[in-house]
Length: 461
Ligand code: SF4
Ligand code: SF4
Image 1 (cartoon, rainbow, N blue to C red):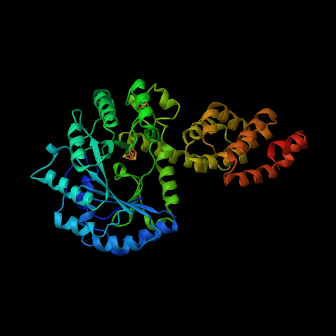
Image 2: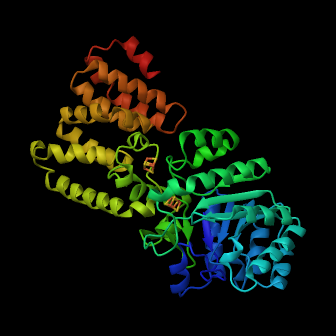
């Protein structure tokens, strides 16, 4: 989770998707009470790492008090501070005194020298040098937002500072798209340079990490296999992203800064980090793959759901379209609670496959259809989406589908789905739930002439 200490910034990166927030914010700095509230929230969530971000987090007027609180907080084991580095050196010296090297590390956002005014570049380099001399771990964060970026200069400064960790990302726009970024259709123009940057980083011995996801088509297949061979950890950042979860100074939460202008909630509405994560997964991520971005039409990675089509900020209109459609379907179901489903079979089928990634919605509709007894509809849905459903790894959903097959007296399909459900529920807290479902329908299974032996074998009871 990322805590915004400050909504003011001393930097002016052209690609920054938080620019608007930094300009318009009235709540400049987080209060100590709010900061403590967030720490309590993290304790309840059993989270022991925190990211301090901004704006520029180090210009918080009570930064020393915040660091003292963190130093005394034994439940928070590690803290990453994301800084732009533009602040007076005496301030950095003062801050450095309170930083325990075993607890804190820094991620400095560094652009090419040409992107800075006055002597800001030198100020940043000297400030990093000061923190390095205090024994602190520093990573350089580098954002690529134009075709001809000068990564050699980044190597030079890392070399000068004795830093061997670089974290890179493609710059993504916010929803307003008023910052500098490279659109996915232009990725082929920049891919060779990025590839060279990665290869040169490896040859020079840099530990390279990737911040946000990159689409699977960014590199050619040949380039990708070479990259994964030398930096296998990039694999986790390919094609898909998850909610980062930022908390603002007023305790608002949003999925990640690129989606700052999209849905927000309040930290007080949740009991723990898991709930926030689930909230954004449902409200946003579950709408992926329902509308295909133009540049992804015919892409195999898209069809297989292994690439989401780039940063979600590029496709927020499609996500909104899906949200709207799902609302309409909800209304449709409400108006058909007491009617038969014949007239809405088509939209229901659409809706089912539309919300496969939204487990709650999917369960709700499956229950609804089961209660109505339209098992053919569930079968049709299953047959059309078998792969995606099995990939969900959600045995409860599979079991509901199995009930439909039991009622249809389709022994083969019922057992196939039950076996898969049991396999998937091994070691998960859904297994018990799944077993309960299984016990509940034991009679149906037995009357269905599955011998107790086979049943016991399958269910493991
Ligand atoms: S889904 Fe879209 S962004 Fe991802 S690899 Fe395919 S074409 Fe590229
Ligand atoms: S939507 Fe995903 S890729 Fe885009 S900024 Fe947020 S986390 Fe990164």
